Length: 457
Image 1 (spheres, rainbow, N blue to C red):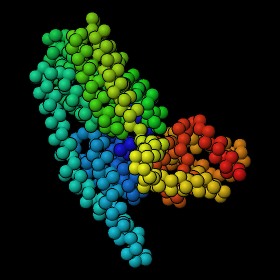
Image 2: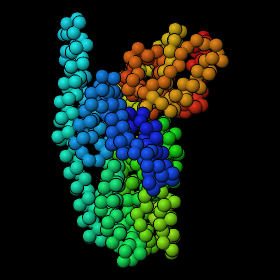
Image 3: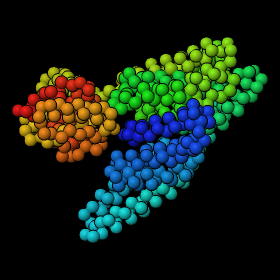
Image 4: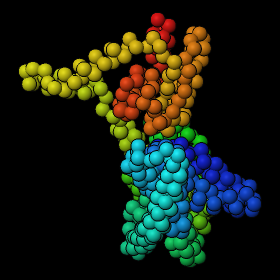
């Protein structure tokens, strides 16, 4: 999922900026520019995700089929189809990959282009119809279920538990349906009689999203960590909450943090009897404070801060505990197994073989012409690492090219691959014959100088 979302974060940010600036309630309202908002979120972003998902499975050909099939879920639903795109994009790539493997070596010379084009068109068109008929109605049914759940909890006076429905609905980009279709009308009725309503803050509270983005900023990795500060500005100050949804989609377990943060914020608001006089749009902290009635500022601000704090703590635990088991831990475990067994175990023998292969690779750097930096998305951290090593190579007078790419795009014949230590095992699966180098920090690793010295020798 991260491989589909992260390469397209730039497009999400572009859409967020245009939305925050030019919608009627934005900072610089512009009717012409605001017309970009709807098509971008309805068509551009889902199609990019679908294309990327298909491309991850079967290259450019899979990407074309994945993007085509994504149109089926877009037209088959009346909400932005990000989740649908993440399902049908890889599915389209997988189906066309299966077909290509089935006919491999069986096409007569001269008919390759004809078969390739028509097979992509036939499978793409057929899957598009399936996506239109099945995925769209399923997501619409999910929307109705979430809306009825929010209504039931409100009627039962169990308001904090509404986050169980609201936060997942937001991540599925149903936030406007929940906010303007359910909470807004109910809140207007309350505000007309009481002068304020807590319902205006159930969905628009920026606290849960702020906590998640802060956790990524401090404990995230790669491009997610690097883009989170900018996303915080767009989310918290600009009020475009959709900007943090991809960060949850990367790691769906963070929904727990969003739900807990949202429930904590609602409970705090109830405790202080806080509310707003109208629905803030967009959900910027500035808009929220501008619509806060006198005597409610403490409760509203605490509602946002408590939600952010709870969300941050839970998100930090999830992000910090998601590290892969390291090779050193595996070696210790096999050593313990050997000691208990009284002789060397098969696992220990396997590790020794692996070490022998690594030793052999250490002496195979005499004819290296290309070094690849790799990370999840192939951007951000790996690009910066590649830039640093390029400069070092130039200073050392070595004629070795340095590039960066996503792990999913690593070539089988790669010579030297540099990855973060948490991703090295995946890189080895993709390119087992390459010389692999693990680093803890792409920006400042002593392994770069060691590699240069080895190349000199």
